[in-house]
Image (cartoon, rainbow, N blue to C red):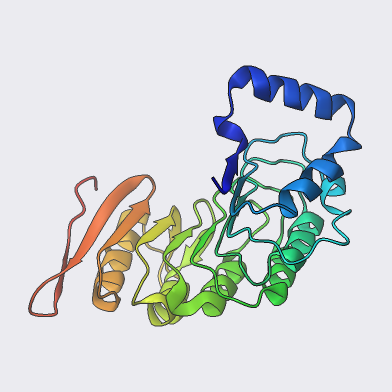
Length: 237
């Protein structure tokens, strides 16, 4: 098995692991280095609340890793430094990253992170990252283009121009999951519901495949019709 998820370890074992690591912070770098030097492809560090940047600053000597997915979700002490550091060792194989609720990561970190990667992402999730703006979303989409399958950016302000000029033209062929919650139209001061209708209409005209769209917090399904037009449903408005 080439995956490791801390969340799915037995609770009593997780308690013991974190108790030891919390008492002996110097062990974190060795643990992380062991993960990166292994054959693990899926590394889920979600909810490792005590994980800090110092754990990722001792990766010297590690060759290119096999990790394709990594999650820092709810790692509240992780900053740009960790994101940039790990990207140096995941540059060729990384396909998916989750930084949900990492409130210390900023646009500058995302920019440097992308500059270190050599292959596009298929999934990017930054829900509730309060210091990330739609500038980063645009760069993610532009970098990954048609390889992007899943994009989640809940609680990040996104306007219709970003959807029209970036998400639609760059990701139209493969994007399957799109999560949004803060939408605005720069042209008009429209209520949220009106903006949702605009987004649905815009996406329905752009995408050629089935899309699951989550908007604050309802799900909408856009599906292609045989005559190349599109239909959409919005059951919760």
